[in-house]
Length: 347
Ligand code: TXA
Ligand code: MG
Image (cartoon, rainbow, N blue to C red):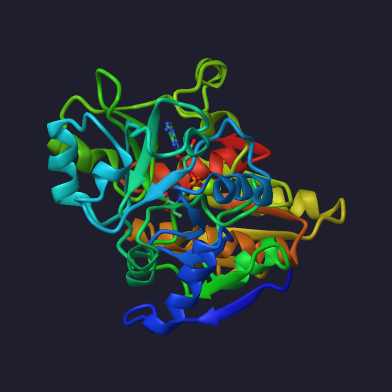
């Protein structure tokens, strides 16, 4: 199968181009498309064969469920049942946008979508291409991030192509995805609302609306045994080369990063650095480095994380990354980095 890439204007999508994509989806084939977070690998959520194709092509374990994407708040009823009042309050504030809600699944959604769980993950993306594509299909779209299982999520059409060339019919190229990091996954089926995956909407913001919200202890051994979100137990977001994460107090960690690189380079490793703007400047613009962004602008850091990781893995055989503060979106950034790391050094 030859993969076609079609450029579509992300702000004002050409509807005739999206019609072609919607028809491919109607025929049970897969289409990768941009959302405001990352690219998704989409299939018709009501078509079991499409859903199975997603798992197969992505190499996704069958017990790790998919997110269903809708184009309006009203469409939630097609996907979920027994929707609590809190869900409507959250949708009023955060839909469309980077928040995914776990709700009781409507039986019209094939159980394969949810890996046979009684629940379903649902989100309304805030991207004109995604919204119009769902509208034209006239059916919700099931879509995981459009990367091979356990790889870094894609934020450009080329990233998708690198992972799926000749395995899917169409990639809609809508340029770089603006947020660059996945949605926050919030489980509303538990007694206490629980964040299963930190994402662009930070815990602090959700706390203002749901004071009792808690964040699942992601990554601890305890949670690995009995994960609330099946996605938690799998290795995720990993670059294909070793990544060392260095965290702690500055400027100490900046100096340690350079020491570490020098020591490792003696064993002929070709090492790329991923630094904050402050770290980069403190170290006098060290060579073979990419800048994540300024510590004062964690949203920028979030949006450049996958972009820079994919870039570094092409050119080096090891990456050393400077950790950031685990507040706001920094929690999501550090969650991904910790999962990606082959080694974590804390000072
Ligand atoms: O920003 C995003 O959320 C992107 C874009 C494409 O929408 N999608 C995305 O999908 O990141 P994916 O499949 O890569 O991650 C979905 C996460 C997984 O960790 C999965 O385990 C969890 O959501 N999930 C999905 N359905 C669930 C359910 N019914 N119960 C618990 N966790 C669920
Ligand atoms: Mg993913």
